[in-house]
Amino acid sequence: MRAGDDADPLDQATRDFITARPQLFGIAYRVLGSVVEAEDIVQEAWLRWQNTDRAAINEPAAFLATVTTRLAINFAQSARVRRESYAGPWLPEPVDTSVDPQLGAERAEALDLAVLFLLEKLNPVERAAYVLREAFDYPYKQIAEILETSEANTRQLVSRARKHLSGERKEPVSSTAHRRLMEVFLTAAQTGNLSVLEDVLTADVVSYSDGGGMRGASRIPVVGRPHVSKYLAAFAPRFWHQADVRWVEANGRPAVLVSADENPVALLSVDVSAQGIERIMWVISPAKLAPYVASLSN
Image (tube, rainbow, N blue to C red):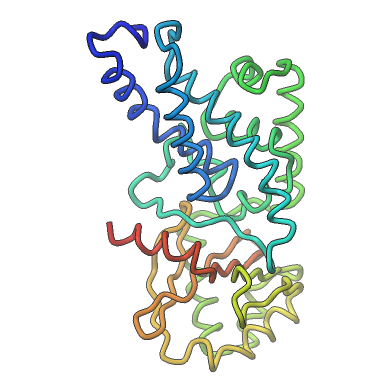
């Protein structure tokens, strides 16, 4: 059916958009690493869809994916400037994937917080090409059309993205192994057990705290097993004292929501390989934490 063949064109347009929306959000979120920004992109795509000559469009989903991807790329190019001046480390905004493990995609790829963090280092076009191929299984020809480039260049974009990720990140472990090591890490962090921390952390582990400029959040990453383990042990008494922990899911991986006096204060996620914990990610910024916590109660 063509987009304009319905008795009530706007009703059909709405149905087409609602059907495509999970995928549109999934694309925008992976490219931008932000729920708020992704929602803005999807809303803009809806406005453009309303104002488009839909009678001339044979495949609404393909059209909407193209619009969303291009909008996300443009937004990412301007967002990079803002993130360079971000107060402290920038981490992706977490999402609860317990209801939709793939987040609107064919596969749950390019969704892990560590992957989104590393994708941020790529240029937006490389990021979009990788997301469309790896998460949504788009053919290279279609990605080339979306990105307005050649199929050969599209293959190169995806290949560069893959090489970047494989060079920056070791193969992750299963969710079961991830949870098991994170439980050991959490107990050691809560008690300040230096020897256990040193045992579960890799030699080049990095701890990132995204506080969005909040007082008390580390403005620089803590790097290396000795520094990270001592850093965790040092703040254990005051951070974990009377803190409540809740196991949750964030971006397809086990995570821990830390609360104090029933107020969420941090989301703890780790990136785990067979060698141990590679990255520790603390989302402390209220602007990123609050929407995630709100989604848990829905």
